[in-house]
Image 1 (cartoon, rainbow, N blue to C red):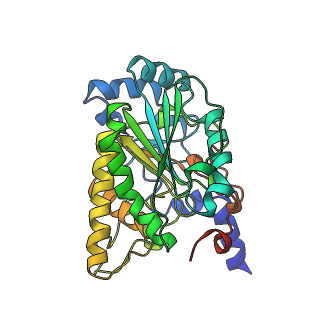
Image 2 (image 1 turned 180 degrees about the horizontal axis):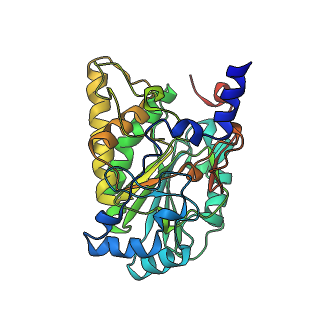
Image 3 (image 1 turned 90 degrees about the horizontal axis):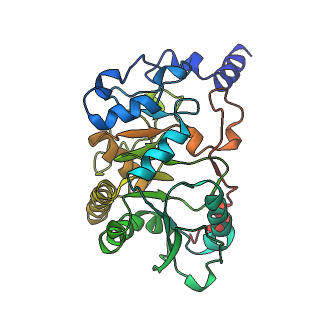
Length: 322
């Protein structure tokens, strides 16, 4: 009974557990922020000490973005003056199109990068079924037909090559940044330019409060995604950065996936395992807190003050092709 009570307490108040682990190490980005002119701007708009209840900076001095840390207006104005623009990629293949795409796009129009030009890139096997969405000025929808694979795992993994190809062919000519999303999500709050950076990773909502030994990295030494340890556990449902960095990321992950395929190996969590390996070797310059992709089934967490993007209800048995 005592064990159950302790577990319940830790789920409601994760810092009680994290105080014993790596996540709540006291770190400061001040030294790093003084090193470049670009970071001087971030120092004015990000207050690292405003959230003493969470980790706001990594050991390599990358900010972890939480509600209460940043000035939204400053980021909107700065990125507008710098001419920032964002390409959003999303895959809606098979039953995922009917189940999620319309809600995803409509909610994005209400919350995603409203101060900047946005180009949507929807990859689907049924272009004719893509819903008509009322887009605001300076926001455009591009629909690209892709092959529907027999296994959902292959759909998940081949998206890396598809994203890399469209960056090279089109995005790099029109957008400064790229964000890649899973379609089974709904925007519910501001998801603005404070999320932009050179390489952007997302803390997984189910793992951000756990010790590293519980992270589900790929432990198979035969896989290119193999990891003994890491910094955090990142969620592949959201990642982004400058177009150059996202192109490098997707190319590297696809190369690792194909090397595994050649050796008849499949990573534990498919492209997410390879993404975690990439971010272990190439540290992200900016990390988004789980506010930016939250699962309400987790229940109440006192450190999650706002939900910016929510997992949509999932019925994998009906949705996935195998």
